[in-house]
Image 1 (tube, each protein chain N blue to C red):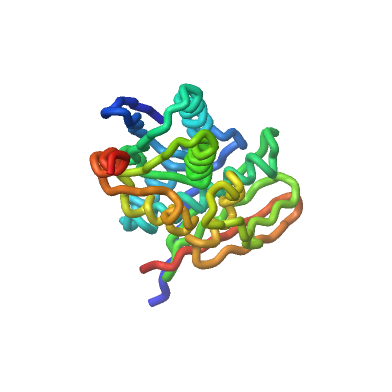
Image 2 (cartoon, each protein chain N blue to C red):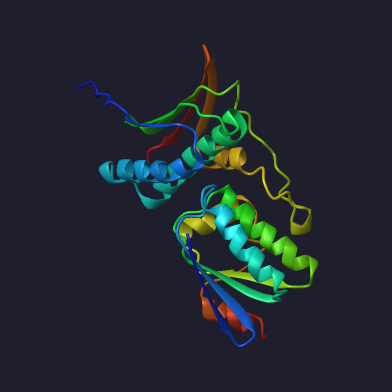
Length: 141
Length: 112
């Protein structure tokens, strides 16, 4: 029998950093509904948070926008799709922050995209019209 | 994000409660800035009440560590759960920060 794809859970934000609270609740609700283990839930929450934070800070830069987060359980994986209307902003290119063992040399920021790539199994980006579309996936265990 | 501060012998113990993300980290930075102004040299940050930490939370703790290092202070962490600890490991911060299982062990480490 062919497996049926369910509609993704969806959250729409306007680009305010305080909306991260709504994002956390949204991901947790999805986690409870799909009985995610705590590690998978944390990884999806972290990747979604880092992506949305980057869009707000570096894409929209304080301006009002529209960020849509969709999470779905698909055969063999969880898929998170983040769509926004900020200028071109590709988060699928892995960053290589200075992870020097000398903490005095460490930059305070710059870990966000690195963490997305570390906790997700795949990350892809596309630009469609005036929208950035970031998709990341986590394999089901 | 909530903060609870107490002193055990000459060690300042800070208990953090809540998520550490881009929304809450500015509040945490302000809180720590007040303590660092006092020139405190021995600080334990208890993360037992932190169930979630993002890169913004890590950045806050790195900043506190670096500022204390500059004036000869020392920061120790404790109370992490497995997922939080995992993020420290991915960011290769587990070998940099002095991390202890419990608050008592972290406080005791200052006198050993």
